[in-house]
Picture (tube, rainbow, N blue to C red):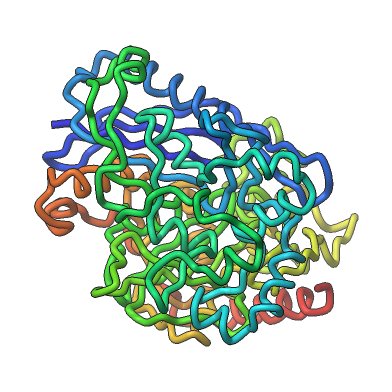
Amino acid sequence: MLLLGIDVGTSSIKVSVVNADDASAIASTQFPETEADIISKKAGWAEQEPESWWEYTRQCIQKLNASGKFDPKDIAAIGIAYQMHGLVAVDKSNKPLRPSIIWCDSRAAALGNAAFDALGNEYCLQHFLNSPGNFTASKLAWVRENEPEIFRKIARIMLPGDYIAMKLTGSVTTSPSALSEGIFWDFTSDGLSEKIMDHFGFDNTIIPPVQQVFSIHGTVTAGAAADLGLKAGTPVAYKAGDQPNNALSLNVMQPGEIAATAGTSGVIYAVTDQLSHDPLSRVNSFAHVNHTPAEKRIGVLLCINGTGIMNRWMKDIAGNTLQYAEINKMAESIALGSEGLLILPFGNGAERMLENRMPGAQIGRLQFTVHREAHLFRAVQEGIACAFRYGFDILKENGVTPTVIRAGKANMFLSRLFTELFVNLTNVPVELYKNDGSVGAAIGAGIGAGIYSSREEAFQSYKPESLTEPEKNNEQHEELYGKWKDFLEKNI
């Protein structure tokens, strides 16, 4: 029996076909092969076209089918992971009315902050576990205020994964996890927040029907099946944001378990059974994929917008003829501390852990007679790892005390140097797994469709590929972090 997983990323769409018997990937592909464009008409804006996501998804599925490695008619369930917090607004025909305002767009932060003050900080933190900040509800409020003609035509709003599910099934649904990441969910009443809807002037009819993450969100239509070579009636049985899904793919589901990722953005994601919140909203709490009113599972999410995107930017500027493996090797040739060079990686929108400030990426203490490309490559990885440490200290303030962190061996964790920096700066061991967002989505579909009888069955063959432990003497890493933190605090 086969499972199909779709990961709607910012840079590309990735799709995998998974053998349900051992949760192993039979075939995977992504599209486009170069990173997808982000439309930025003004500083701080970030948009993508929903129809592009669908076209990329079609390209991936058709390419996988052409591989001949499996019979697409054997796919028994489909799962979808997606970039979080995006706004897709559609009309009565489910056609997008404008490009999606995606996760790293900062235009709505002022509206969210005003709502935080108007509704009351204590109320928001108790009921939403967050400030409305720069999340989906605030993005929709921006459309209402600045594009009233478009707002009046909105029949439904969706997240990016909901749009792909709708194109497959014709159905539109949401979940407590999805609504919580948009700041539409009231954890006190376990339902749609009337307060936020009234404050922003939204009609409840724009919110799709609510059901659990692991459930049937629709079945593949005859038209989509013919187009994609799938079997009509195949259920879409799982939809989740990329970070909750990354946690699922690492089997991080229970209180005390923690996942990390370092892709375009960087995340540490901890699961708790408490309705916890940070008083300054520097970290955010959302309903995890297995959250229910009876068994609370909250994902506490630390996000750094500028991680892999900073690493890629430096590659493009200083080493665009080099592969990442070559860049990592050059970075390893430089001693810890990059001979004084310091880099802040915050150049990708408002940073929540910095209380929605936008300091931009910065390079400090550059010496023309000392520093070369290799220093820049190393300083970027050190700066990103120090940013993780800064956020990790905020998580510790909020009661997160991990003994181990699980991460996928992908993106920046492919760099041995970055992995060692991350471990030594947080002083927590890291287990690296062969995981992937699209594979995680496929496994989620297996759980949602009842193909697996339990989570334990789904992950019974899951084992780490490696374990990296902190060095016994971390004084030099602490010294580096102290210099980096001082540089940050003088420049935010």
